[in-house]
Image (cartoon, rainbow, N blue to C red):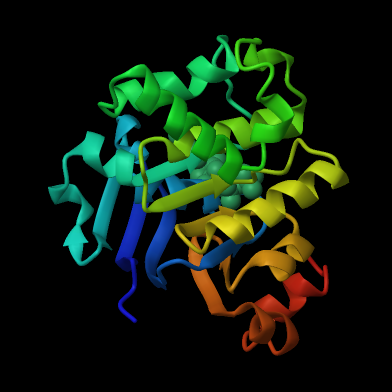
Length: 249
Ligand SMILES: Nc1ncnc2c1ncn2[C@@H]1O[C@H](COP(=O)(O)OP(=O)(O)OP(=O)(O)O)[C@@H](O)[C@H]1O
C-alpha cells in the first residue's frame, strides 16, 4: 500500500538549532503510528512540520520533503492542507460556546449550511466520538462545563467536522485520568478505520496498546520504526533497547 505521508530527508532547524535531522519515514494510511522518544527529541516539531504549522516560526528552516498522497505539502494551499491534516492538542480546546456551536462553528467554516445539515452532521460526529448519548439533552450547555475527557472527545469531534484524512495527536491523553484515557484510546483505534493517525505519546504502554507501528526518535533523528509488536519485543538498535528498558528518558 502507498504511504499516506512520506518524509524524505526532512530536516528542521529553528535559528541555529537543528531539531529534526534527515528523517525518512513512510506513514501508512488508516493506521496508527506512535511517535515516542525523550523530551526534546523533536516529536512535537515533527507534527507541526506535517501540517506546516512550523512556518509560523519566523526562524524555522525546513529542508527535504513531506509528501501527502504523493504531493509535496509546500504545493498544497495552507488552508486546504490544515483541513486535510488536522491537529488535536495535548489539552482539550473547547471554544467558550455551547457544545452544539463548537461543532457548528467548524462546519460553517467548512462551508456546511442549513440547520438540518448542521444537526445531522453534529449528531454523527458526536456519535462517532461516543459523546452523543452523554450530551444530547445538553447541546446548548457551555462546552466548558463538560469533564476533561468529554472536552477532549468534543475537541476530536470538532476536528473531524472539516473531514480531515489525517489526525495528528500531540499527547491527547496527558491531562486525563485512567478511565478517560481508556475511552480516548478506544476512540483512536475506532477512528483509525477511517483516518490516518499519528500520535505523539510519552506513554510507552499507550503506544504498545493502540499503535500499529511505532517510531523512536532521539536527538532529532529517527532511530528505529517497526510494527509495534516487533518494536517492543525485538528492538534492532541499542538506543531503542536502552530507552525501552528505562535506562534514559
Ligand atoms: N520555537 C523554538 N525555538 C527554539 N527551539 C525550539 C523551538 N521549539 C522547539 N525547540 C527546541 O527543539 C527541540 C525539540 O522540541 P519539541 O517540542 O519538538 O520536542 P518534544 O520531543 O516534543 O519534547 P516534549 O516531549 O518535551 O514535548 C527542543 O530542544 C526545543 O527546545
